[in-house]
Image (cartoon, rainbow, N blue to C red; front, side, top):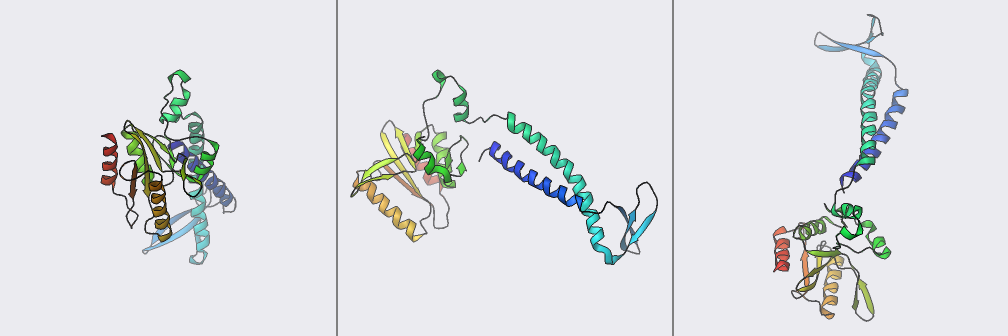
Length: 249
């Protein structure tokens, strides 16, 4: 999730909050008050605007005290929200994304970088609707672990595509989407990161997937990389870095 998306979310929160505060303010008493310490006890008094007249508020009328405090809180909060919304709306309209993909799209075609990190057919876009984690260079992926792997691949200038469709042979042709399809001088590699190996159903599917790769001549360590989270859902970045170093050889 990048800065613009975060700003959009924050704008929505502030707009809803502003509308709520305005509704609340309409229902609150329009009073000022003062408080005094009398024999170690805090006492509250209503104070008329433009007058020194003060009226004691009894302990039984605590709701009135809380309503007056809320009224003054809202009166302070509303202008802050209004100012923030104006500034963020202006920023939202003028801010330019600076990830490689966004800047590349602004260039004349002759200057555009041809290296891509993911495919863009409509079927692929539909598939990735739930890819919620966004890398620093604008790629959406499905998990934090995949985001970390993508960041390292990108940092090492390794050409890869995320969830690129791949047809394999089983009983019939079967379409899968490897996590990463990597192209190097040594050839094409497929990288699968298994993130939920503590779940029996997931573990069973992962095992069948590796067997499917093997039956199609895609094996570890020749052209298949398999990494996984621990049973506690943790990722070992030293292992990931070692895999990436092997691709650079």
